[in-house]
Image (cartoon, rainbow, N blue to C red; front, side, top):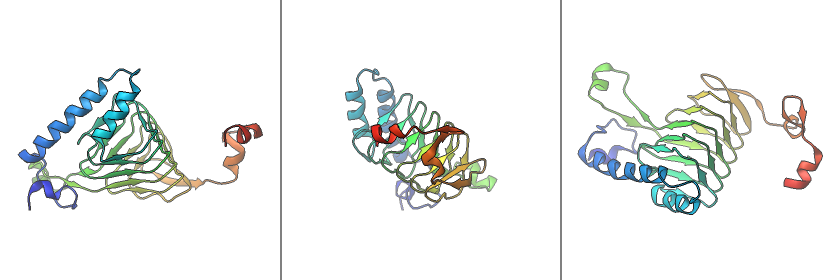
Length: 207
C-alpha cells in the first residue's frame, strides 16, 4: 500500500513520503494565498475556501490568519460556521464540523499522532485519526481537540480546554483533560452569563 493511501486508515505511515509532501506543498500554497486576501474581499475568501476544503457550506467565515496542514483538503464544514483568528486544522485526515458551530481565537483541531515508542517516533512515523464536531457547538479560545475525538451537538467547550475523549451532546465541558461540567438546560434559557438574565425581548427579536 502506498504511503498516501494510509492517511485515512489509522495505520502508521511515513508522512515525508515525496508524493504526500508534493501534494501538501500545493495545498499549503493555497493557505498562504487565502491569508493574503484583503479583509474587504470576503467574496474572494469564500471562493478560495470552496477550492481549499473538501466540503464547505454557505455562510462560513474563517478569519485570517488560518492554518491547515493539508490546506483544508480533508476538512468538511457545514453551513454558517464561524472561525475566529488563528484557527489551526491539522487535517492529515478528515475533520467534520456541523452547521452553526463557532471557534474562538487560536483553536487547534489535530488528527495526527505519533507513536509513543521513541525508536518509531525518531523515524518520523505518524498515524491519523478523524475528528468529528457536531452542530451548533462553541469551542472557546485556545481549545485543543485531540485525534480521534467526537464532540456531539450543542456543546460548549470552555476556553483553554484540551479535549482528549468524546464529549456527548448538550453539555458544557471544561478543563485539562476536558470533562463534562453540566448539562445544557432551562437555566441557560434564563441566564446568559453568571447572574445576567436574558431579556425576554431577545427571544422575540432574534429567535
